[in-house]
Length: 136
Image 1 (tube, one colour):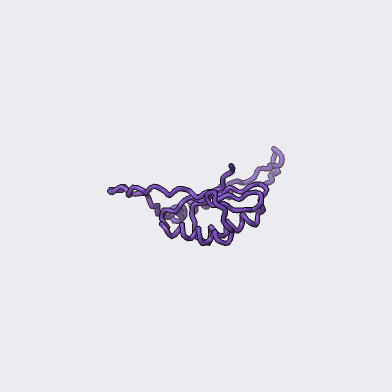
Image 2 (cartoon, rainbow, N blue to C red; image 1 turned 90 degrees about the vertical axis):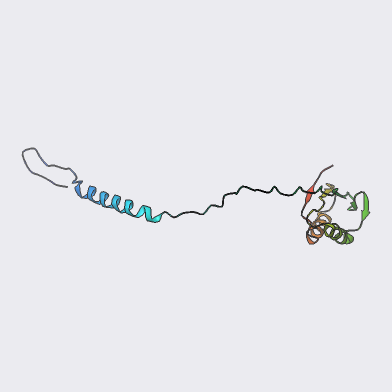
């Protein structure tokens, strides 16, 4: 601040010239460095397909797996034990690993979670891909 003791009294104005100089230098630095900071991004765009994909096969019928309130497991309305589920699921997956049947699990609200967890573990170990929960 500059104080002047003239006939007009003290002058209390800020000298903004150094501030403008600093701002211009910063502006020039940003203008010069901005193009350096940009870099291209590779984007893999989808290409036109000349040959259409093959027609998919009809999926096999779904497997209805029901767990009732007494923790009994039913495979397409036939009672099975939880220990034999893994073998049955592996058999279904080995028939056609690329076109697996859908596993539809209908667990009763009164069934124990442990039985449902064992069924899910068997499905995971058998490498089943299509698992759905249904409520009937």
